[in-house]
Image 1 (cartoon, helix red, strand yellow):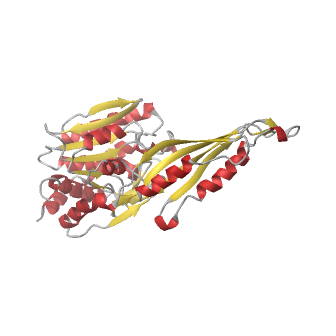
Image 2: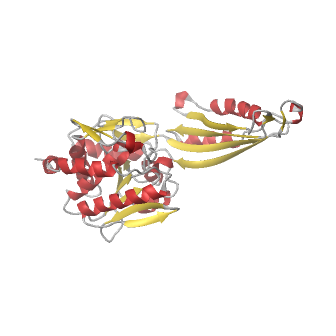
Image 3: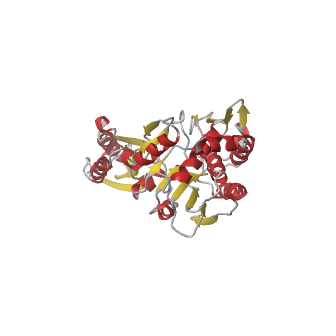
Length: 372
């Protein structure tokens, strides 16, 4: 039997434990914007890690968000495994949608994105006799762009031979490319006036924003898979006042970093149309693209280890794999549980995928930087 086959057999016996671990994780709500809930979930993740890999993590608190890190060995990391425990689901979701199992399918808030991936991660490492050179980062803010954990992830991964990201997988496909992402806020300043008595004295920030929205939306380029999407907007204060202020959020994505630079320059160059109006553009959370070149060698390794059984996809969503790829570390993503409907009602995974994916992650972890 191959090393992968041996690990499959070993980890298949852990399937009931994996299901119980998943139920425990999903049963502790962890919305990204709730520090109290995050702290409770961090305790559960830390205990789960200690139970399976024998060591407690470093607990790194940044702006009330607890991130967890394990490091094994004295030297720099050979391979870094990355996950997150925050979810998009607000506190109270479990009351109407608890963790449940129907045959091979488990559902619950965060089950595929990505508490199932954390179960895969810890069981994969528990199956290895030697964790020397392995590091693990589990962060608390991936769903909002990792604003407080970016430096931790980059500092931990810098110089590693590879990074494995435990995000969920659709149909078992590994994610070999992700679009880079940049979030912006465009603010317009006008001048308030009474909408009935003296509208001519005002400068309508809403009208100015409408001009800017059309310009912003035109920056996308379908031929280059570049999207620039105006999203949530706020205009004015009352229905009988010419609005003095307005703002809109902008989501820009592309596989091509040059395209993101083009969009950035265009957004920063926006000029007002209405006399007297002002336009200001602020960059928010951003992640560089994860190009196929960053994953090609690790994907080839995964193909070789599995007898060409794994397939690949490129996706528009970002992950912390964008960060590791951005600092030049080979990165392979989508190694978590197989499932679907992430960020949507009815999120689910295949329970049978947990031991299978854990075996793959363990095999890759043992090989990267050693047996390639």
